[in-house]
Picture 1 (spheres, rainbow, N blue to C red):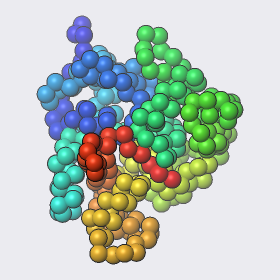
Picture 2: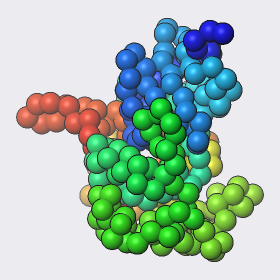
Picture 3: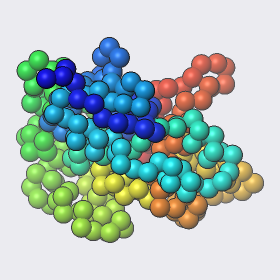
Picture 4: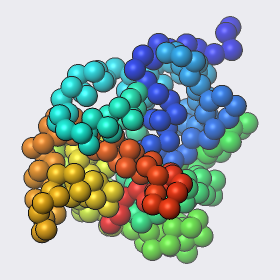
Length: 290
């Protein structure tokens, strides 16, 4: 048996995709990364236009990294302006990861007003303390809502969550008790699913849109956090002094079209990767402000 499986991966950049603020538990290892897709241990590295992966995980990896998305068509749908063109060029090969629903909701719920490095620390702390360990593997499974529902707020705060502990505990209990069924939301349209997600403690429109985009593959979803708001105001509303949040949402829905989620991720990652005034590159940016 070969020591790895091989997957064709044209128009794909593994490093950009994993380090663009979508997921937070993958660990660099040698020339690749090790992590989990749900409960499945995976090691993946990129050699040219091919991915080398743990044998038997090829199908799961290809789906997880959305290798079936037509990036050429997606990028062709973007508005033709300098800001979007620069972001698309910078993020060439970046794909939106298809994330497990609960892991996606919980991770973005705990990411508000935190930098990427801190979000990673919280994710690993929660996995290590409450998740199921896999023998011989350095990353534990993200704990199910039923497990977190039995925790105390103090225990969750011990994982570095701060005030987010209350929200994660309340959301875990809402899901564990059946008040919100994440799987059932797949059958709803975007507006209905957004409203249901916003019933969860601590979940507002930004986190709900993250869940729609990364968990439910609603590629039109356009989460607006502090980074995206800054980009929109600077590049698209530079001559307007007062722009409401509603106007920004309406503009994004109309301007970026059916693949607005891709446009948003490219704009976000490009913006946070630019040199700061005074030198240096800000690579550990706050992900989703509340």
